[in-house]
Length: 285
Image 1 (tube, rainbow, N blue to C red):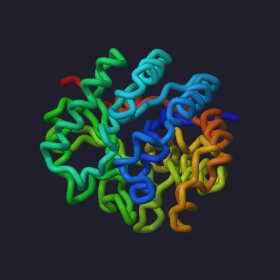
Image 2 (cartoon, rainbow, N blue to C red):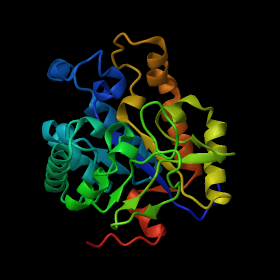
Image 3 (cartoon, one colour):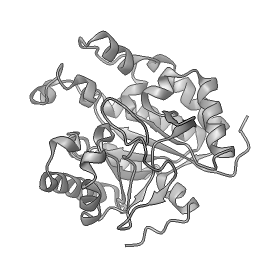
């Protein structure tokens, strides 16, 4: 049963290979990526099937390196009516890139994705949500590269990412770049992440449902749900990892398709561009 709400929530997919997750940075170094079996096409097609069954359009933040290797995957996503946005090029966290290298990556990714999809590519999400207090210069470079919105600043505390005191609603930054923050729920002074990635996999469905209801009905904010194709692939390889890292990376994968299907049946979802229009944003250059 669909939960009554006038808001359209955001569904976003970060299209990357399973081995490109930051948790594997040491276990599978970049110089080994070319020899690791690709699984992103199959798991992305699984997500496309789920979305088609629910008649939902989403925003796909596609990695440039994936688009270069699998151009038909990008064309297929676009042909089904989804929004194409950029996840950068190499999945290198921004703090490991300088300004010019970052600008070159996001420019190259945007051009390739536009060529493949036939769409204007206006949105960006950083790998590992790596726009933090020390990399806020990236906002200027995104504007220089032609982007109109970002979805990288996580208003929470985390051991790798986050700006705890960042704004939690969709807003426009000085300079004109719109920000779509991943969802957090206000619990006292804390912003508790909900409705995306490992949080979606970890929390019982009833907790996620309640969090989205609170965001919509009490706070007047759309939920920003994000997932990765590898989070729907229970058969992916499992290289050795420290115990806590393995738990964070694999918890809940087996049940994730069921959770997402229930969310899509109970709440209204759409693209980042739809959420921006709902917030009164103009993306005209």
